[in-house]
Each structure stands twice: as structure tokens, then as C-alpha cells.
Amino acid sequence: MLRTSDFPITRQAHIDDHTVLHRRFNVVHNIVDYGATGDGTTDDYSAIAEAVSAAGEGGVVVIPPGVYRVAQPLLWPNRPFTLLGMGPGSILKPDVGPDTDAIVIGRLDSSQAGFVARDFQIVAGERCCRNALTIYRTTRSEFSGIFIMAGATGWALWSEGSISNRFQVAVRGPSIIQNLDYAKPANGCAFVDYEEVLSSNVNQIDASVGGLDGDGLYMDGGRSNVVVGSFEMNGRNAYIAKGRESIYRAIYCEGTGGFVFEGTHNCEIVGLRDSNTQLIRCDHNALRSCLLRNLSIDADCHGTLLDGVNYLDSLVDDGIDTIHSRVWQGW
Image 1 (cartoon, rainbow, N blue to C red):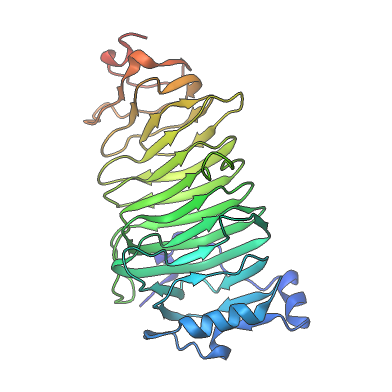
Image 2 (cartoon, helix red, strand yellow):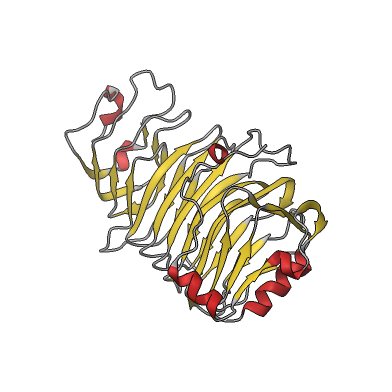
């Protein structure tokens, strides 16, 4: 039986004044009214696509509790709309194959503002898709209360060229959930620039990622992003950042787990804690003009604390506990 406690993001869906206004003007569309069964077996793709098409610009599409299998990729229209689940009981189950993205919001050929997707789960089995949730070139949008436990071969969340968005996402490895066929994704969350034209800037990323065998959080480029949350990985790296030279602070990180930095500049790293593998690995010329402060490192950590420190040119604050002496060689 699915419990609210299984869903780590506790904010529940609610009908606010904005949604009531949409309902009054007949732009709220429940996917069940369009034939979705929610039985976990029937392909509900056509019913969901029809509801989205009928909603129009600014409309609301509601996912009531149920398990909605989709055997084709859900490509949301490039216009403002709201996709509203009703908490952990609202589950999308992609089944599109390992080389196809399951749910795609936005397009690469143009930017769009005003998307809202919140309060639902994406749960599916091994090799169900490439990326479970893909977001292209959105701005001033919200993606919150989304729990992903699907066997994606790529990433649970892939965001490309997105600016000024709010993300609140949880990604998890195996746990017991309603006897569903599910699996863990290969990697957690990725935020990357669109080619070299449009950076992923000024996003608020609140993510909880754990129990995976790949990478937790990957950021390539971007400026002035805020990252908070928890990253506890079984396998490779909890955090990877690849940045460019910039006068702006690239990343602000608070309360996170292990990190890997590649060419990251002008960032502030706050409140790191021990992880199962590497705490911090700095590749060649990794950290320049960065601030590290209030680090807390377990004295019994068996992973690499700081590797490649000869390439560091950064300030380390006084609030650091238990650093192995070899960390500072070449400082």
C-alpha cells in the first residue's frame, strides 16, 4: 500500500485560488474524464494527450490517484500550463524504451515561461526510458513535489538551457512501493547549457538523491544557481560540476553530500558532509576563486577527501573539521 511517508517531499497538492479561477472558466481537465484508467496496465497515453490538448494555454491538467502507464513519450505543448497531481498516489508509469525520453516539457528551438508541474510520481521498471523527465529551455517555471523512481538509462531529470526555475525533486533507488514494477535510474539530476548559446542560470534546485549507482547531480556551465538538498550515492560521484570562467558565482551549494568538481570557477561551497565514496574530488584546474567554508568531514571517511589539490587556488574558511594532512600538500 502506498503511504504518504513513502514520498519524501511532504507538501500535498491543494486547490488554491488560482486553480479555482481556472475551474470557473472551464479550463481544468481531469485525465480520467478523457478515458485514462489508472490501472497500471492499460496504455493511458491517448487520454492524457487529449486532456493536455484540450486544456489550451494556461489550462490545468489534473492527475488523480492511480497508476497511469504511458507507452509513448509525453511531449507537452510549448505553452504555459499546469500539470497537477494529487500527491504520492498520482503516478505516471513510462514504458517507452531505453533510448527515448519519457516526459518532455519545452522545446529546444524556443524558450517558454509559465510551466507548472507538481505533486506526482514517475515510477517504472528497468530500461523504461532514457530520461524520465526532460525539461528544455523553460523560464520562470516550477517543477516541485516530483518523486522519480524509474529505471531510466540516462537521468531521472535532465534540464537543458533553463533559466530562473524552481526545482523540488526527489530521486530514489529501490524501496517498497505498492507492489509496482520499478527500478532506480542510472543517474540523478543534470542541469546543462543549451549548446553554448543558452546557459542554465539562476535556478533554485532543491533535490534529494540517494541509493543510485551513477552520479547524483551534474551541472555543466550555468551561473548563479542555488543548490540545496541531499546527495548520498552508492556508486560514482554525488556531485559533478563543470564550469566556465565567469565573473559570476557559478554554484552555491548547501547541505549536500560528496562532490566532484571539473573546471568550476567562482563558486561557494557550504556545509559539505561525508559520502560513501568521494567527498570532494578536484580535477585539473578545478577550483579557482572559490570559497569553501563550514566543511564537516568524518574522520573515518575511507574515500578521497580532496584529490588534485595542487590545482586549487581558493579560500578555505576556518570552520573545517578533521582534514587529513595530505589534503593540503601543494596548497
